[in-house]
Length: 601
Image 1 (cartoon, rainbow, N blue to C red):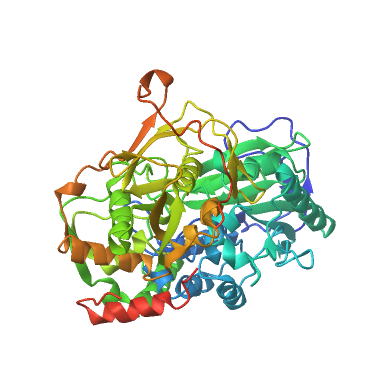
Image 2 (image 1 turned 60 degrees about the vertical axis):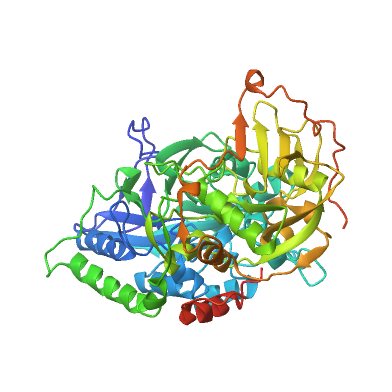
């Protein structure tokens, strides 16, 4: 394929894919074009199941395209090395080894690439056989970008400029302490200021530089997402405020976007695509004589050839063998049964893939919060919905399933807080309800209502850290142990260091609080201990209701509101307030100790 010559096209194609002008490609007869394969939010989903592909399928599909005459590139839009036991037990190195095996060409760091610590991220970056790109990940001490902003890859005479973009939410959706120095000052940032304009400017600078460097096409690979809570940093907002991008491959919100057209700053069309999560689909962006198209390849679209002489079969078996060799290093521990459950424990709406743990109560949310309160003997316990990551099906519970629920390795803490701080935290967690928020609080020891018809008045910093509540609280009728929340009373609160010490998800109101118990046990061990010791090794009927025990009530209209007097609505709206268990299976204890070595986030 030789250099492209763009020709203006009379009208945009009606199909979802074509958003750029037609062009003529002077190509060899057997050259079909270029396919950019893209993944995002794989979260250690390395193996196929009934609904998703595995990495071996991806390798096979790439080999199939190349056998048909396509030139291929493979990119990832973030959050690949975290999310399951393979990542947790290796600090992300096992998933990275598989990505190296597949021959990724570029990747962008998502917020969860930083979950094992900043030093570990740099180790991952250095071990990758492909570049990590980010136009907005900056060293605040120098003003320079930490990574290259873009990379031009030339294939058969066509220069494609890939621009990387990381979400500014990384600071609060990973662990804020990782981005600070020993004095607690931020030394890394993601261009979060000026209501989005700092990010837009950084991206525009990178796009312009790639264009000036000779790129024929600009493909933005971003970990931004489309959720309202990510505003003003969503992929669509970046597209609308930047010119020169041709294609935007997105991640972060786990969205399934099969080639949506979005208008850029200059009124030009940009193709937006995103492939969901856990390899539910394989994303493809295809460049041919007829234009640029986008298609998500689903399980129903592709099955690996059974022809043992085919290139795709060979690629599948080689990758599958490689993955199995890695799995063998931890499978005995992962498959160990640690407890049982009589009921399905959920983060999704039963019978669907719709996640509800981030905007409503669930039985698994109740269970996780109860585990913290029981272990630490607290009045109240909080667990952020974003920290509860997977369902547990009825039957035996394996160690791997526990890690899938709590893959981060956060550590249990107990602090003293005021009632006002409890109310502020609940208000922050409910600020986006009924939309999702990773900071939505699953609770134990209290009940509360969220009146979603009341607009949120939570004030945040540019990094989305809590400042104050500047209006009426939408959280009302908070009851602690059956009694109304006393704003001036001191309570004991159990959670993990991510929220209580490091300000994760923006929970800065706990900074300076008196710490009674500090990082006493990692999160997955907390859950195992509660089930095995407090529940006798079995989760029973008390957790049967998938929507929980009625601790959180969402009220969507004033007519449905309780007539009871709520003494929290007139409360002073303050900002930041001043202020080992032996297991039956010894191998698990040893592994947990290893896991916790770098997880005191």
